[in-house]
Amino acid sequence: MIDTHCHLDDLLEACPEAPARWRAAGVTALITMGTHPAQWPDALAAAQRAQAGGSTVGVALGVHPWWVETVATVSVSAALTEALDQSPLPVVAVGEIGLDAVRAPHTLPAQHALLTTQLAIAQHHGLPVVLHERKTADLLLAALRRHPGMTGVVHGFTGSLQQAQRLIDCGMHLGVGAALTHPRATRLRAMWAALPVEALLLESDAPFQPGAAHRGAVNEPAFLPETLQALARQRGVEPAALAAQLDENAGRVFASMFGRLLKNGFNSLLGASS
Image (cartoon, rainbow, N blue to C red; front, side, top):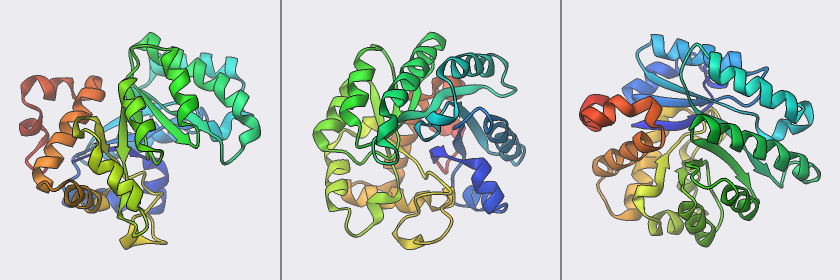
């Protein structure tokens, strides 16, 4: 299984033993997020640490909309371009970037400017994007339509089925997280059942957003099989077959990370656990 969205620096600080548990659970590859220039070195160091333990790890670098008031768009452009060119590890996406109308709606104009800059950088480098979205799906759609040909993932998506379909039409995939395991997530489960499986990716968002069985606990990639099983039940398919499809989807989106695996038979090379 591939965890397409986690925050390894935060996770390993809170839970140093997490890598052994995710490997035992069958999680063979992860993508960790950069969220601020000051945090990018921590993201890269955590990725290197997990790689040394035997996991395949990709890194996404970007500036999260929550931190828009702590950066200048011009300096972000220079810093991100330099980081993509000089990173000691391959950067597989620009992210986590996006728009958030809940936490600080007054900053939306600045968020939009920051997002536009980072979309252009991703497009220039031929990289997918990892998008944060809270009550901003239509705004994201408008921004993506101004950058045709973009691909990537809207992580932890909780919008409407219609918005989901429009995002897919724009080239986006949607990240399925542990939210669907919560008892009241009826609408969300129905949406995940209705969307084309080729557009879905599996994610933990560890150490954040734990599922129903882990309320109040640190979320871990090791819990990813619970999300997979819940999604499989909702779609009426076998978990193993669904895991193989979701891993293949991740391989297409993050081709710079998984290109060799795709070329040589993705599932067989990634491992039987995927």
